[in-house]
Image (tube, rainbow, N blue to C red; front, side, top):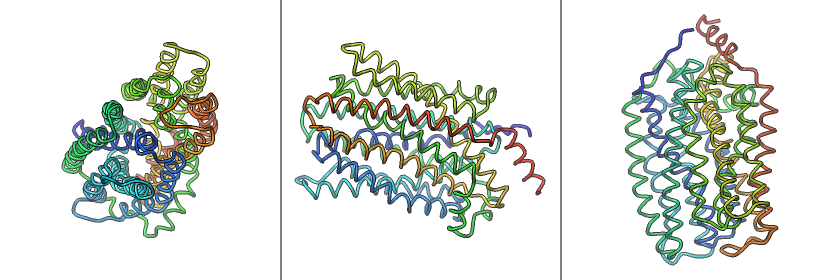
Length: 452
């Protein structure tokens, strides 16, 4: 089949909301844990439970949103109406996470943060799942999907980089007072909300949906769930994605702790994460032609191995000192970020191919259901990592804002280096069993085109 290339204007409009999504997601995933333990003085184990509770809630909300998105039939299409509906609750709950009422403390403060975190993940899911689903509808070519999601990955990473700048500002404000932090975060939350609003509206206006897919949605939520988890390609892909993201969650959850308590340079955390984020975005033009030459599945598997090895080297930080620690950490972060950019570009593209397989088997289009499962797995990996981190640090004797003992430092570096190494190695090994390659996808598209 000849390649159907999307106009650049369409690709940019699709990628635009990812800047806001990346900003908000990273700031919550990266900063809220440390902000809560070191500024609000909430116990790390409790914060781990809060994030884990949000994943339990996601187990019900994500599939429901995906199913309803597939079934929506409005003048604005199936996806864009949900993206519009997400704007107000996402902005409000993002603000609520970082700004608490004056005088709130103890159980009341913990409850406020819990409601804000759980509510935020629900609200932003209203945009995330329909947005990702729309990409699978816009691009039907095997490699064009990688281009579309590659642009989106770069936009998402750009938002994440902007979040790092904000986090650096917050860390500097921490040196003054809690009030100073809250004043700064409230200002940034308002700006972020306004930008998110503009980007989503730009995408909604600039994109068009395919009317011929409205009547192909599954008629039963239970059969939808059965089809997703009964799809052998989807099952393997989701398991690998979960394992991979447990590993990648380490960079978001623990970098602040490593920089503060192992390197003794808390302000360097942002630069380390930049060493991960910037190569992740800039490497997209490298992965796109390589995926055509080597194959999406094989290339992604190789990148998992490189990412795992890069993270595994982080454990060596315990055995070097001085500037060598920082140089080693930054060098390994660059290697990990470059290779992780491959997964960020190719994983939603591969999932889109799996959705085509489902359509061939069932005659239905379930982009929302499949990306709901993918999104739940993605968030669950972060939730599991936050839960493990919270309890591990507490059991090791972590005391916020004090010099940590060797047990705590070893715990941090094990979670930061060895655990991701094991996860990526397992993921790469399992992914050798994934068989939906370019030839298989071409046969699927030909089968659907002929109506057989």
